[in-house]
Image 1 (cartoon, rainbow, N blue to C red):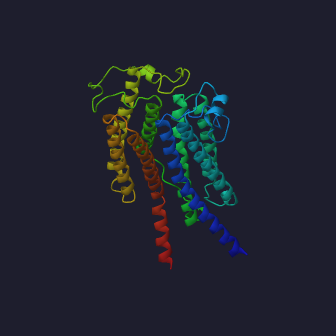
Image 2 (cartoon, rainbow, N blue to C red):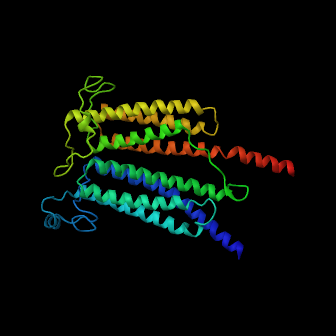
Image 3 (cartoon, rainbow, N blue to C red):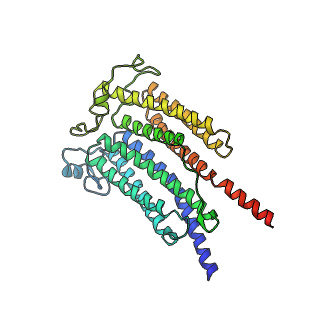
Length: 357
């Protein structure tokens, strides 16, 4: 009977591992679909929520006009928006399945039950942000938080998968307690803070339509320090108007947002370089630090290309994919750093057991 229970738990754990990894990949797809929705101006393709003109599928033009006369139907944009909602809803169901599947293991030592519940909470908040994006007419604060929420869901899926792998290996300290992990240093904390800030700035650039506010690189509109209005560009309670499609800010305000994003990229790059130089001698960290620097370099190149080529759709999508890759590389580097703190103790225990034998 005990063997049967253990076999069932192993199967459950394999299912959890597969679903959590699928969740990471699925979330990346949902993020890119969401960005595509924004880039083709389909965020208000359906003027209501959760339906589209009061229906669960895009209606014909006459029914849409009868439901919302002031918002004529654009079928392509409406379908893009609804596809985004469908895949986001499927992702929510995947999270619920993970929580239910893992519930019987929640009392086991080192099982990531807290991460599972955090994932459920964040996906619910993310759904609310999706609704507010429509009902608040693309208010840039909500749009930016919606992007950060999507990245948070992806990170929680990844962290859950890594924790499940560790749980499956049964890495516990003597006495059955969870082995301590190495804490982050101030330099790691600075790198994480700058990355989060840069992601928020990127969302702010997109939500305020400031992607090509600066023409040229490395200068902006032919100047190293052009005319800018920082107070308007980063005013967090600005008016939306009838809706925020194509933005409401003046040119100098959008220039300030674009320059802020460029300065943030510079600060992040220097910090990542310093982080790599500081820890390059650690063999376990070296691959992830290299991946972090390489991803940053590609992302920087994509950002510059977007400016020089006037923000083509495919390149803007690649820039978002680069941001996703940068977040994943940072998460894996942090995981490698924290897990390295348990290695010496485990090696010492293994040596003692070998000597005892």
